[in-house]
Image 1 (spheres, one colour):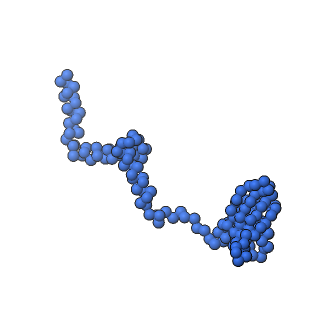
Image 2 (cartoon, rainbow, N blue to C red):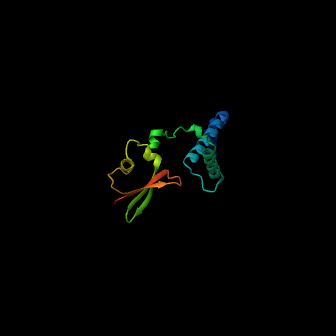
Image 3 (cartoon, rainbow, N blue to C red):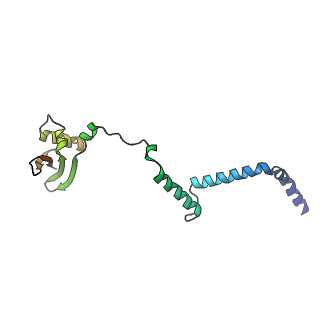
Length: 153
């Protein structure tokens, strides 16, 4: 038995003499283990490490300035002018019902309202359409605010 003890002492003696060098290596190994466990989310649910990771994620979500991210879509006036202002009300027994903003229809100025509405809805639906009815919506001063459109099925 004493032989095995002396063997252990001989095997450990170089590590003991370089204890000053081994301490940073052990600390770095612990940091690597913590980083790997955090990245791969291997902590048990409800442990304090799990709670810390959740807090870090929530802090990132709520405290990160929006200016850091430049992925906002840029919308030009021409893009908005020809896509906004169409509301699909739904389907009924007589056909599909839509509401169109009068400003959107007016943006196709040289066309008559019926032709402008047909163009707008064909672009939006990506198919040819057949208008069943077209009713202007007016306010108390008889100004056209929009159009109620019914398409055939």
